Length: 69
Image: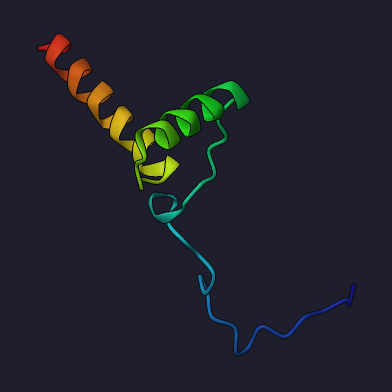
């Protein structure tokens, strides 16, 4: 490392991304992934695994909100 660095033309926050905008990977257990892939193939659906899981999670949130009120 150098003893000193010149930050004269530096731009603060140039690579900053708010946590709300980050797409984080979510890994499913193998048996869960296989279950959904078999279901999608069996039904002949063109949906992605992400859309199926997101749909299920939205329903789960909806049910949870109904139970809480």
